[in-house]
Amino acid sequence: MEAVPANPPALPADLAVAHAPIAVSAPGQLLPERAAREEHEDEVLAPGATRAVGAGHRAVAEDPDRFRTCFERDLDRIQHSKAFRRLAGKCQVFVEPEDDHLRTRLTHAIEVCQVAVSIARPVGLNVALTAAAATGHDCGHGPAGHASEGALSPFVEGGYHHAVYGADVVLTPLNLCAETLDAIRNHSWNRPAPRTPEGEVVAWADRIAYVCHDFEDAIDAGLVTTAELPSAVTEVVGADRRSQLHGFITAMVDTIGATGVVGLRGPEAEALAAFRAFNYERIYLRPAAVEQAERAARLISSLAEYYLTHPSRLPDGRGLVSGSPEATAAAVRYVSGMTDRFAQRAALDLLGWDERALPRSA
Image 1 (cartoon, rainbow, N blue to C red):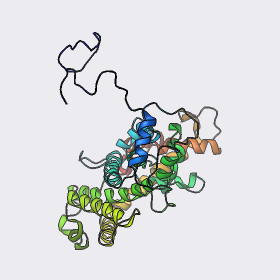
Image 2: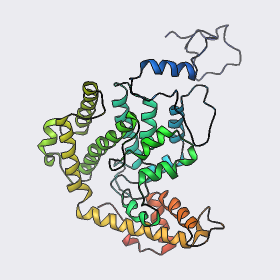
Image 3: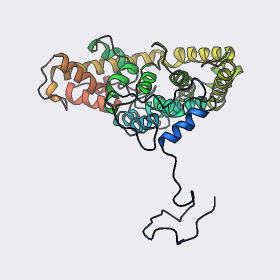
């Protein structure tokens, strides 16, 4: 691409550039707008991939964007949302770690998106839908990760599930597409199957990403060593995160290409299961981690109980009746949105919590 000469006569006199004029196309050339891009998308995507044409069904009808497809618009909305930004203050495994390099729920979402897109792109799936669902998949998590689900379940009819709550409550103000919400709602393996292959890819990408990066974080935290990882894992995908991600992603792409469905061939599937089992035994369910999770659950349930009986302390609690269903829903919505740090500060300030009882990484 050649640079346009400085101050070429065809350029407007009031044109502002950051550095120097860089040619993109001939002046006046019509750019492909959304409809043209959707037509091209329909030609290049795999037969079973989700098309933007015919999708984009939102709870509140909106006119389509001039340039962006409906799923590209969803991705933009999630990335700019407060719910997504708050993930920076919610733990992945380690609560309030001193090591700044350990993952948060935000960096986890980013890594899941990278894995999911790396699978979706070469097999011809809709990258924008995949990225939107992966980026927003954990926006329903409360403080302290999965500990909040058990803590908040008594206050939610049917129990609190981060995937469902994220799609049906937290992200509702964004008015996302039905396909994006479905993939978020059903990314967990204990949920029904997503309706789209992109949603299924996100479910696999979530598991691949967290087993690999949680193990790497545990090494950095001094909990495990590379030598302890079972040979059932290392002999198939290697011992370091880079090799493991490459192995799992490549196997997913090859499997989809060979079978025509979203899945993972036997050797890598068995390695992933062994990897996850190792992490559960040595990282997630180790006694110190269980104790901290119990502390976090007590803190979170105590905060929810406080706010539902004192709804006037909620930002949107004016007019709510103490203990009412409306106050309970508002309390859960507020507490689930808290970062780990904010929840701990609220426990100290509102509940008189003993600082020594706060959950910490262990």
